[in-house]
Amino acid sequence: MWAIGLVVVALVVIYYTHMIFKWRSPKIEGVLPPGSMGWPLVGETLQFIIPGKSLDLHPFVKKRMQKYGPIFKTSLVGRPIIVSTDYEMNKYILQHEGTLVELWYLDSFAKFFALEGETRVNAIGTVHKYLRSITLNHFGVESLKSMLPKIEDMLHTNLAKWASQGPVDVKQVISVMVFNFTANKIFGYDAENSKEKLSENYTKILNSFISLPLNIPGTSFHKCMQDREKMLKLLKDTLMERLNDPSKRRGDFLDQAIDDMKTEKFLTVDFIPQQMFGILFASFESMSTTLTLTFKFLTENPRVVEELRAEHEAIVKKRENPNSGLTWDEYRSMTFTQMVVNETLRISNIPPGLFRKALKDFQVKGYTVPAGWTVMLVTPAIQLNPDTFKDPVTFNPWRWNDLDQVTISKNFMPFGGGTRQCAGAEYSKLVLSTFLHVLVTNYSFTKVKGGEVSRTPIISFGDGIHIKFTARN
Image (cartoon, rainbow, N blue to C red; front, side):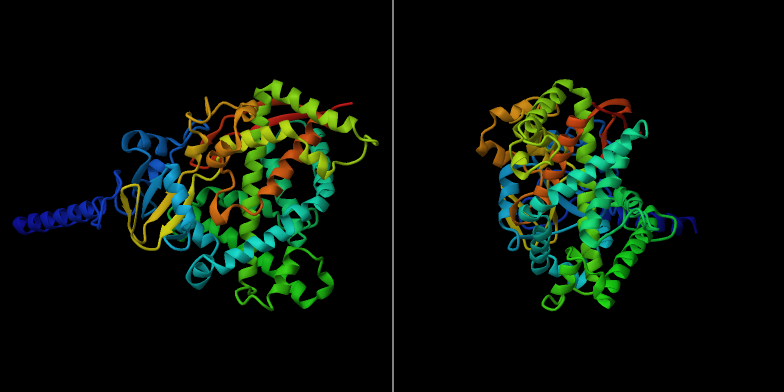
């Protein structure tokens, strides 16, 4: 009996050893990049989510670059992935989107946004073009020119509110401000009179994109999916109200989507809420994180605040009426402000990278990318390259005086690249610049506590950054 048991145990050990070997050494035609696949299913996910205690490139990527070079293989949440920090490879892959690669999301992200089945396929082509078009229509330059006074009013209102409250956690209050304003522009969300505080739901789901997508009770992913369903129901209810009562129309993003249902077959009563959900999430997290980092940098660099204040006070002094609002020409004239914004975007690198999925086997830089594998283009590695940016994690807006346009175009991609560059880029930069204008011309501010940051691999702020605002005379 004991002999039979030992044989069974031996067979099990041999079987799983064989499976692990196959996982770590996949058979392909060609040469895979060096690297480790970790353990089956889990891969190297646990190492990927260990926080990095600085704004530098995440330790997961940095350690493997030092060990394997700029291109290596790994596995995250059960997916085989080739990671590239190489500019030439990243450019090549972005140039061949639709032929060699397609857009891909981590499984948990895909399930949040229902990017599966037919919708998932459509998102690669027709749907993406439509989403980019409608976003530019409502958040592109021409729309932003008329939206600028409303953005400025929104910032005045919120900064005055924060100044009356004592120290505030700026990540929290900025997140609420950005979400409420963007949601109002997309579907008329009225935060003050709504029973649902939607910005809180977005905060809850943020840290679950790289978790294993186990939608079972008790897991954080399950709770996030519940929060997602709650939000989608509210968005769908708003859509149905407008479909049933044209008097509720307000000429916004949602109304255009309703009008386009006549010609775009993929615009259904289930898809439109998904569309709004994704756009809200993108603007909510990116702008709130970037603005919060701006406060960290400004409180640590008073000389930057002095030069910002000088630039913006000069703008106000040139006006015939000093109480008039910010104009588009004034916004475009903010030379130093743009340097501050660029430097913050360069260091922040909010997404860990761009994800693409190989449509077929192809060779690049001497390696084979197998069909079905994911490619993670680590664009932060370019923006934190010490060969291009001296002391790359040091906040130094003046460095932009010495960078030529060719260097910038090759090494600065805060809004992605290729055909999928973020359609909300100008909206983000306008909000950031206008925020700085209202801030330095009307308020003084001091950090009370906090300021520690980490990458998990997205940026988190620990106990937050608490700022005390004081109105200036």
